[in-house]
Length: 138
Image (cartoon, one colour):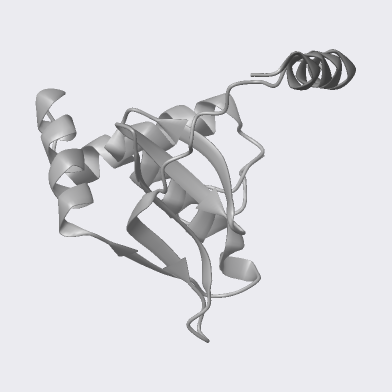
């Protein structure tokens, strides 16, 4: 390397500052979709780097290690948006399998486990709409 090119590079680095090291983001492998009546995808969920990611409007909104919690969040989103539009939730067999395994590890069926997760959510935020779509009770 010539002396001039080294000086130019050093001047550029000093001027621009250090660049952060960027790790490439792996894509989310889709496992669940929320679609409206016209077939447009509104949201969904998938697996990325051993974490379950919830996506709404094309943006990742949250992630969790729990497949059952992802499923519960998607069902809750479906219930909340029910007044605006009817949404259909489609879930992959793999997501159902791992969520069922998680529920069984807690000693419940998947439906029981999802009901418990919804109950916990409702206790944290009693003014929100429930998974059954009912308005909050006061």
